[in-house]
Each structure stands twice: as structure tokens, then as C-alpha cells.
Image (cartoon, rainbow, N blue to C red):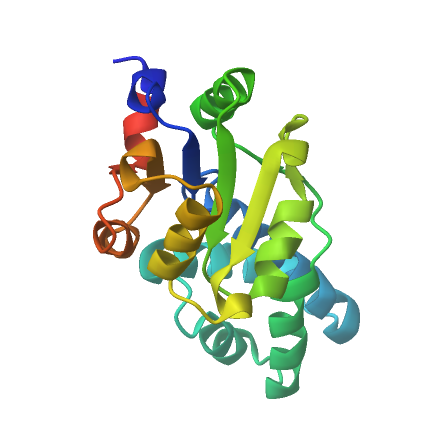
Length: 202
């Protein structure tokens, strides 16, 4: 099915950021790389084993206590937790974040057909903004309106409703594209149509 069929009768499409528009791991693995390089520079510890350990730990167990596990494995001082956390917020990435190919094409088609595009993203606003600034948008950035849930101190469903209200739209004129059950639940609270981002890739 042509992905655009989902939005033929919609005026607004709302996206999450991580694992919807690009893989979150593309950001995190570059943060880990930069941290390992920092430790090599400051502590003269070889960066390559640290990078390999962090990547393996992330792939098997996610982000939980990844600094603590890495610090224990390589004898890294706890004081560097500050630098590790700071890199998550303001890292200057070696490589730009790239949109999923089919998502890029989908969003370009939305622009051509004059659909409004919103990003409503959870997580630390500074970190999420850092990701946005280092994403290759291919000119789409001028068509995006972004809301940070933590900055606004509102739930996603409240922000979704505000978007509808400010554009004088009913729920059936919008679509939410997410990647997890939470996004789906927040959409359902106000009867917003919802699809999993993977549907776009068919």
C-alpha cells in the first residue's frame, strides 16, 4: 500500500523523533564514540575497546547503567559521568543523523501536498533539540513545527489536542506516526488515528 494513502484525507501529521524519523542508536553510538575518544585523550586508555564494549552493551541491554558498567570494566573514574551526561546533551556528531529513506520520501510528499508536519517529542529538550540540529533534513526543516513535552510540561495527548484546537481540526483530520505503545495510547486518548512508523516502510 502506498504510504500516502494513510493521509489523503488528513491535514496534519504528527511524528515522534527517535526510531520514527531516524534510529535513536545513530545518535547514541556516536555519543559513546566521542566519550571513548575523550577518555583516551584524558586518561590515555585505548578508545577502541571502550567503543566496542559500549556498543555491545547497548545492543544487548540498552542504555541502562551503561556508564557504570563501562567505568567498572575499564577503571574509569566516576567523575567522568558528568562528561558522559553532558555529551548526550551537546555532542557535536562526527556524522549527521539521516532520516529513514522511506520516511524522508513520505515527508517530502506531505510537503508537496501541503500537509502540516509536527514533531512532538519526549525526552530531555536540550538533547532532542541537539538531535534535530544535527539531522540532515534535506530542506524539510522549514516545514517542521516542534513541541517538547518536558519543556511544556504537558502530556503528548494534551499537545495533540492543542494542535487540533489551534488549527480548528477534528481528530479524523490528523494522523500520529509513532513507534511504541505509549504513543499509541496517547493518541487513542483523544481518538486520533495512529499508525506505527514501520507501516510507512512497506
